[in-house]
Image (cartoon, rainbow, N blue to C red; front, side):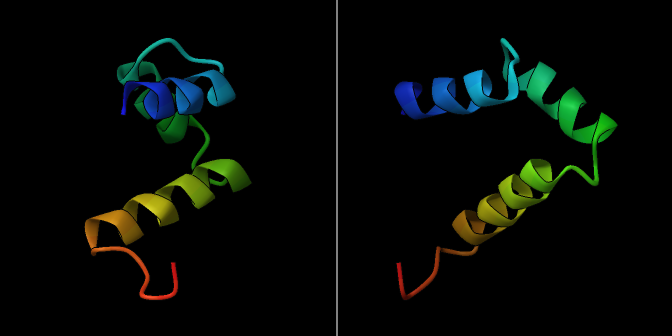
Length: 51
């Protein structure tokens, strides 16, 4: 899990989950932030049956 988490942090150019959260709060309309939010909702809800 650490590798996947680090890749997301690298993608957004941040060093921690706290910085990522701040970035998401500061850029709520960013297309990548919106996509990440959608992915997190899907994971929380058990994922898609098609995936």
